[in-house]
Image (cartoon, rainbow over all chains, first blue to last red; front, top):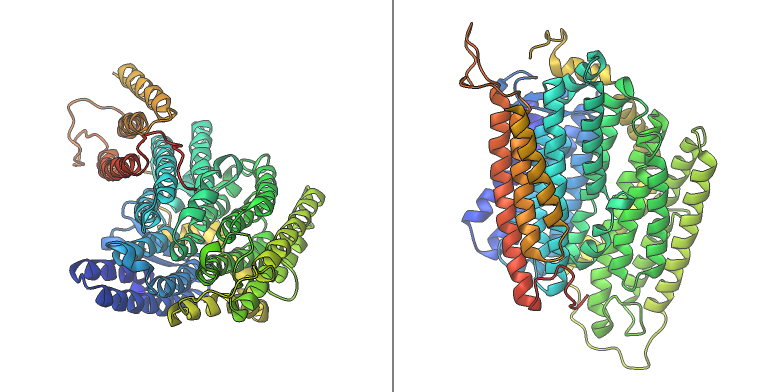
Length: 499
Length: 108
């Protein structure tokens, strides 16, 4: 059974989706979906505990050995990312079960397929397989984005789909170039060949650069980020909450490519441009938060802010920075998702004003307190996880080149975010119209539970900061030992080159 | 043959990019289709071009690389599905806003 652990996070949502497609009753689909998500949490938790012994779990599909067969590789980073996906998926599905899933057909199978693509993208050890899982994830996300209908969603969906199709085309060109020059698409084999190869280094660099561009598009790096805010604002609330982790797929892919293939062979590929663009993204996102007119739009800009902050890490190629970045990644994903769910809950309570920043009926008191907690987390103020993550990241960045600029921009952005959150929080919570509070539908228990758990994530992550940071440190140091990765995937004796 | 293929890929790509940059959904759709043709041809060529050889590896026999053919098949299937979805989405946008302009004014 242990041997099959790496494939379980992929199989569970896939089988659930198949089952849901045959059973059409909504209640049945909900039950299957929630059960599958719970099962996914259990399975990924098991995988995370299993991989914490420091060994990589390599799963050769169909028992074809790498580099000829396709492998799944579960290390600490991949396992932890699937766990994060599972937790977020469970909570987002819980929130969606309050009635959002009734707005159209096939919500539940699509949701499971999205989880399938996400888990697969984190676990795969093969670049073409990564492309396939990306497409599975994207195809599900296109349909989920349009779920619920409306012109705003169709428009946002159109530009999102077109951009991602162009991204897929570039991805394939990069893969073709890599296969043409290095003769392999297995990540470990590629890392090995990249160090050895002499002749086609320039073409391989170009190919890797194309891949990085595609990952940056999915993550939302500055010149390629303009799709993100309006897409995430237009999406339905539970869908947007799940989308909070989609940008992280691109970031994790860049981190892995950098640690595994670029650092040993082409260490200078990212250093000259990525940190600068990441800082520009942070600046833009902070300004976007100031300019946002809705709470959900603020949450969308918050996702972009975390992308910018996280993409400072890959170019440093340092274990300490990556460890801090991984903790930041987990907490910023959960905080952004909490922000989205909260925006939905507040919008329902405020009647016509929705989550727009204008005077209207005030939300319930407990929602206001939740907003305060999430806002503190998002701005990175003490005592919650946002602060811990920011301190860890700033401390790790102290040693690297350009630290002064990074500190300045990150702290100034935090300040702007704090101003935006304080101003808009006042508008939402305190500035009432002199009208009696309209009758609103009480929030269903599913939404309430999802909101409370996600809001509690900030304080809980801060309480558990020490073990989590230690785990992030172990994951980062494992990420930065490409030798062990290559050896476990290709077997102890690397096979002779075969063209 | 390499030259012909390279020219075909280049022409398809440039037409595709030009059309994708238009502001109406139908040309964008056509552009993406051309772009995916170009990509598929390119991917096919990444295993080197060989004439009249089977993609079967046998001892002593000359063969053409089978992997890019498998990759292209996957890419074609995925690209086809995506394009179909985009066409549906474009039609829905046309029905909802009455215009096929990518930035048609609507509720934001």
